[in-house]
Image 1 (cartoon, helix red, strand yellow):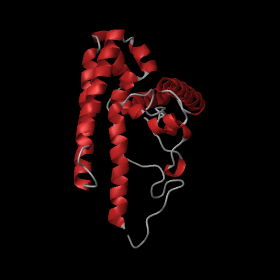
Image 2: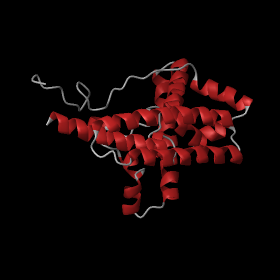
Image 3: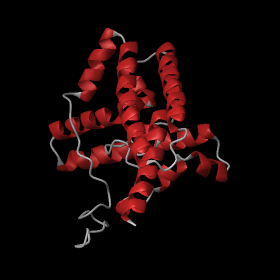
Image 4: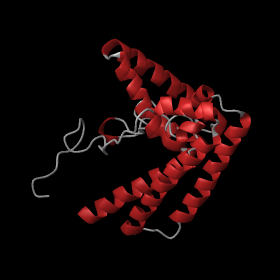
Length: 219
């Protein structure tokens, strides 16, 4: 049972990582909404998907008979309004430097998807040529990810290897996107991201989290 649960969880992560590589949508990672300050968190309390995350899914868009462009526009508005609301609330409770640092962490966690966010593109003053180059980088990653996904099946080791490769691809893509920027744009990007931050993996709904399950004593 434990092995089955581990494989099922790995399969979920595989799908998420592959979607991150596509990075076609606005806001959050992997074309998912909720870029917010959570850095693309797609899950709600207890690990359940929120409505915006569902709307970012291609099959859900097809079921709703909603065009991809309309979905992107809706999700971009959702993302912008969510960020504005959170900024307002934080401004009332936190210090200005704390709000600024949280924004920097968000930009770091977005990774390559940041360069496909309309608001960030505007802040960086990216021109049409630069945006086109970023799209080409995203398409190359999508194709490479598709190749990695072939013949994996339920092989947990291969899944883990694929996720590691995708993480490497993401880092390389950020470097490629930064190289597209001009010197003055690079300075703005450095200010937007600040000093490097490493975030621990703490999944929502996990042991001890609100809505989560505590580990059994016999595990």
